[in-house]
Length: 204
Image (tube, rainbow, N blue to C red; front, side, top):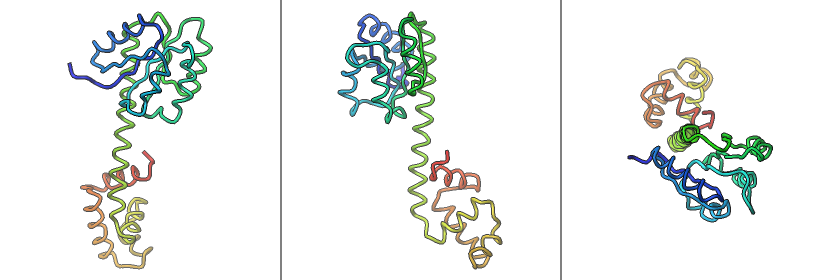
């Protein structure tokens, strides 16, 4: 079965770790289990981006403490929190601190798999946006100052005549700049040009 993404399971209970590893592995995920949040944090710099499934109540570093330490990394490591009945207040606090989901123990395998899939969908969408923005920024950097001015007008919805008037150049010159910037941006249509420009500006 093809692996669909990395999942980092963190729980001090060995039986829970083994159960989650089996359930998520059977669903096609590449699972790595850790006996503590500390063990995960030790290798995080080299860990593949992926969903973190963590118990909320653990010794030394709780799931809530882990979430606080991951605040700047939640875009790469979306967190799902597992909680026992006695830990609900702590788990709710985790949600307020950016946890993606809260699953109560004893958990249903289907609920965990569905939550992880949702986390992966969001992670892939975010990664796609980041990739698009990086590519769009590179293309935008290749434009001349005048091409950028023409692009700004085009993105604002101005006609070639309106752009020409604003810049004090002829409409035919605007057409030439527009053709050049379309080529440099790798855009085959106006809609694609606008999408790339918006992506470069971080608006999508």
